[in-house]
Amino acid sequence: MFLRVCWYIWSIFRCHNSTICGTFPEQKIYINLQKLRKVGFRGMHSTVEDVKLESMQVKILPALQDNYMYLIVDNKTREAAVVDPVDPELVIKTVQEQNLTLNKVLTTHHHWDHAGGNEKLVKLWEKELDVYGGDDRIGALNKKVSQDDSFTIGSLNVRCLSTPCHTTGHICYHVTAGDGKGEGAVFTGDTLFQGGCGRFFEGTPEEMYEALCTKLSALPDSTKVFCGHEYTLQNMSFARHVEPDNESIQQRIEWAKLRRASQDPTVPSTIGEEKIWNPFMRVHEASVQKHAGGATDPIITMGKLRKEKDNFKA
Image (cartoon, rainbow, N blue to C red; front, side, top):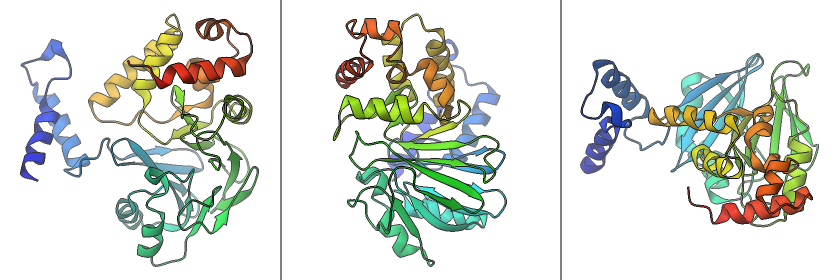
């Protein structure tokens, strides 16, 4: 433990920018100490952050090496749901500190790093939990859902989007205000990442095209995208490789570098932004099709991009 703490302190203070190497301005030291206090010695990859929308609050909770869990809080009732609670202890601690009413678990898919905490959370939590998901392989599942099923979190509406490909039972959750007004949010697990998409472990290019370019693309452009992993810099590096002249990609890379230098999460993006820089949502664009070999069929382009990405090294 002592060596781990020493390594962590060293990593906090090491140079992130060669232009300031060897100098530690007082302000920079203060900021890093604040980050150290927030992140602590648990080894969390990012700080805990709040994203406040008109009707809801989304608490970003880092887990494992690069996963994200999310607490969705209804502003009116303070009822909450948690997305992919792989670290149940952190979820419970946060819920208790915020004095929230937790009664729902939204599971995107059955992989351990997303669903692996379900059974423990249900066991530790004193009250009953509804555990949603689209796959019988999900632990503690008691509310199986499919395309267009809906339920509520307090006064918030949740609509389920079936997005098979990464896994056959993958579900994305679109959350909006009860009156349908204001910004919405979508929790995309391992289907849509910022600048990328999940591997096609159990599906096909046709299925990922349907997920990204039909279902998710149809959401309002202002919809906040909360994905399952901190993969932004890796994905944006590939996006730049596909479209080197896309200035929005380069700008996002520079922004993301600054965020990660301070261990801040790079989520959320928006659906509108993903249409600008995510190659897997741009398979209709001539520049992306040309990179993928020139085929004008977007599904062929989708398959070729994913195969290339599987072996891409930034």
